[in-house]
Amino acid sequence: EQLLLSCSVLSQLTEGLDGLLLHLLDARSLTGAEQAVLPLLCAGQTSVARLAQQAHYSQRQLSRLFLDCMGMGAKTYLRLCRINQILQQLPRSGLSLTRLAADAGYYDQSHFIRDFKSVCGLSPGAYLKRLSEFYNETYKF
Image 1 (cartoon, rainbow, N blue to C red):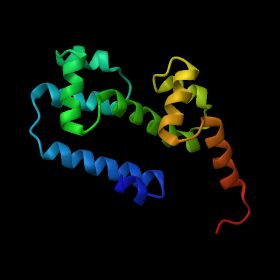
Image 2: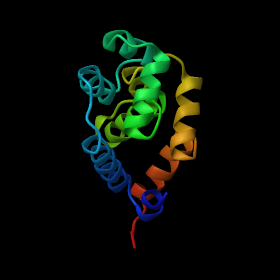
Image 3: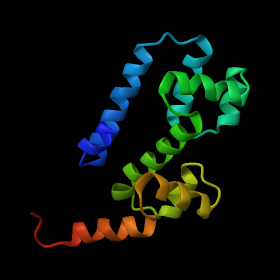
Image 4: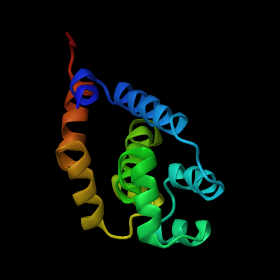
């Protein structure tokens, strides 16, 4: 909670979360399966079911292991990775939100919008409007 309140920019929050998660990983020794799963999950391009299959765990067991290790469920972390990937590509890619969402693994727009709103606090359209208002201002104080 302190991390969320102390960060004023998305990049600060991302760096803070990375540091926190790395600290949690260092504090606990990981099994071979957990070590194999984390890079796949961090890539954000897969599902929890696929990860569980690759790690030879049930989805529930993988979720428990991930919760113990990272402090959040695998599904939650995957959602954060996907939205973060989209936000990082948004200003520089020139692609539409629909295309970025599809590239991040979203198969329908309603799922993407719901996830985006739960992570960012506003809809993708409202986020883009605020982003464009900021960049189109003449003076920034």
